[in-house]
Length: 268
Ligand SMILES: Cc1cc2nc3c(=O)[nH]c(=O)nc-3n(C[C@H](O)[C@H](O)[C@H](O)COP(=O)(O)OP(=O)(O)OC[C@H]3O[C@@H](n4cnc5c(N)ncnc54)[C@H](O)[C@@H]3O)c2cc1C
Ligand code: FES
Image 1: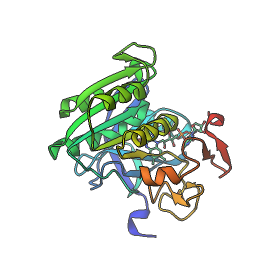
Image 2 (image 1 turned 180 degrees about the vertical axis):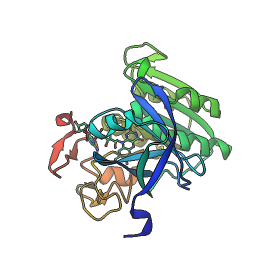
Image 3 (image 1 turned 90 degrees about the vertical axis):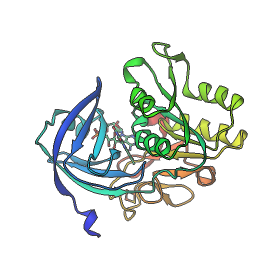
Image 4 (image 1 turned 60 degrees about the vertical axis):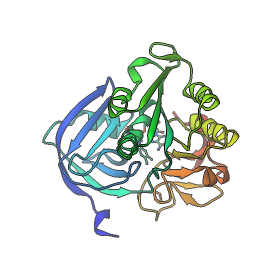
């Protein structure tokens, strides 16, 4: 193990409520990372879980949706409390091209914040489609717009922005404009359709995948993708179209915490 693979105790400097069930934790640690890379956060006495960085350098942060045991405990944590942190890990987004579109679904939009920041700072024309089932679950749309991206919002129920799915908004955009790359993070079925649309329109896609992570640095095999042997924690979590087309699990199967392969629809 490298030194970076041992968790270090890090104080929470600030907690920000982003939505009714998403909080950002600003950490007292400096980490340099690429957009899309993640850290393992150890929640004392509960569990250790992966979270994408939403701030880097001197303002490192992670943004966490309250979901199960570990994330519920995190949501009780306050300024001054200590988390164990190791990383950064994984292969993040490669920022390429002159004109790009980002597509975020639900809390997946967290992974797109640093990407938008880097792309816009490099002068890349950036459009962001940010979607959720309903208005209260829209994450980081306003922050990404403030950075300078053109913003399109979709909600399944029409409570904010266009009524419908992010994929419908993307289809329309791709029929009107040419992009150098599509970047996405969100529900896997959404990303699966986006990769098909990229293929049809000859636009490369980079997608950030979620799997159950244990070691985080490529040794345990928990996050492996059939039939390629690619590991989400080490070779991903961001994969490009060429790899995604070879991964038969993509869009269909994932492993639960025991390592057993299940269809996505059987995950809670
Ligand atoms: C690389 C990576 C980056 C991530 N970044 C973020 C982030 O920035 N913000 C964020 O909020 N979350 C992120 N996640 C997801 C986050 O790690 C999980 O939501 C968290 O592990 C849930 O922990 P828990 O103890 O609260 O839930 P648990 O009690 O472990 O599980 C609650 C429910 O969620 C399901 N579940 C949990 N993890 C997974 C999984 N990996 N795949 C399928 N189902 C699962 C369980 O089956 C269960 O039904 C990321 C995951 C990965 C792999
Ligand atoms: S979590 Fe151990 S190899 Fe990926």
